[in-house]
Length: 350
Image 1 (spheres, rainbow, N blue to C red):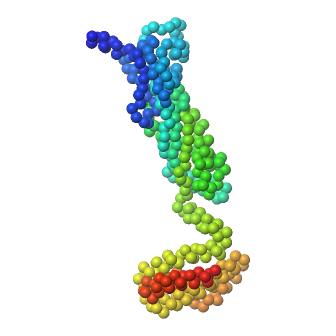
Image 2 (image 1 turned 180 degrees about the vertical axis):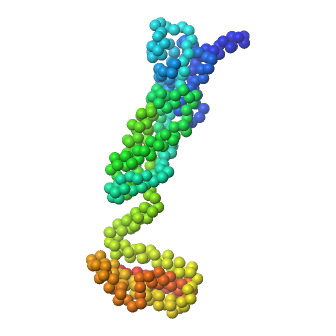
Image 3 (image 1 turned 30 degrees about the vertical axis):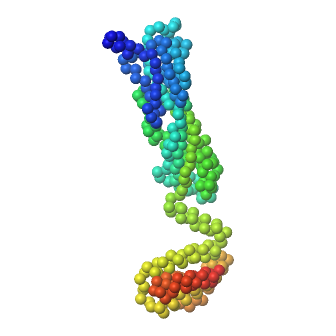
């Protein structure tokens, strides 16, 4: 009985694969010491494909279903083996199963900023990241180009190669999309579609099908982001430099007030604080005149209003606003009075 059990184990009647988990792309059926019985069954489940390999040559590919292994169902293998009649004895061949399920949520991203050409800026360095999903579409090509004779081949084994393909093609995808950088954030779907079109042929070369890509974020390095923020701020005020400077000054006043409050007092006294506050108001008037005339006159003429203010220098701006904050911190000015002075100053800037 034991001898019969041993003999039965040498001939395979049913060949099948049940995937134990996610992430396996290819798996080789264990054939060590065993041969396939003529007339045996090959069971290929949905989301799978099977490939017969004989003496290193890829032969027949099977889709989902139950297949009886004969010369009729193995035409390529029959040709390679030179069978001129129905074979009746067992035969030996390697059988590889491939998962054709979509491999979801595969990450991609730019570890370093990459340079792309842009219609608005000429060239920019950007960062981007997202995910993509793909499947095995051509098992024979994927076997010959990628997996080879390995017992098992997983998603992690090809992850680095696919990420490299994405990074290599981002610049071409952006150029082909015709989308300016400033519009990429609002057109991430179009950007993702452009990436998919650019990358799909590259995936096909190795037997894969790129099912889709998403772009979750597009950003600039910090230094370029500051420049972009200024450009956006100018756009908000109609590219009017005067209004833009007024906007920046208004934004800076609360920060200067906070800085002055934390400075602990400079020993200048109430008189100095009051003088600084008065100088700040006067300087605000000069800035309004200077910003208006500076757009249409030379630098010399633009500086004339500033010289008209006695004792006020451009470098006094910081000190003036700090003193304003110190007055509030010392209790000389209430929050309401501070806010009133701020509103008054802003009115004089307009």
